[in-house]
Length: 117
Image (cartoon, rainbow, N blue to C red; front, side):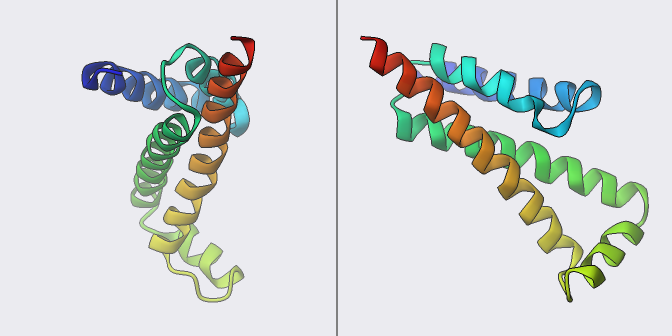
């Protein structure tokens, strides 16, 4: 797959996820990632990587933005509940949860396409 198409796929994934996150529940990104994985020409492992890093970046940056908006008050309290996790750790966990879900959806879409052949 050409590098430019991976960049376009990444931008569509990140922007689409952020838009869907404003309108629908947090798990709605799966309905975007599954068809993107299906229509991409990536192998399942590469599709997982693209989905993981795109959603990790999107959710990490969104969590950072939200943390900055409330001066870190909420993340400090959440860190106390999670026994000493700092705000950066919470942002990494948030990104990882989104990244794993998107990676699985991308890989599943790519695998379904491979099975149909």
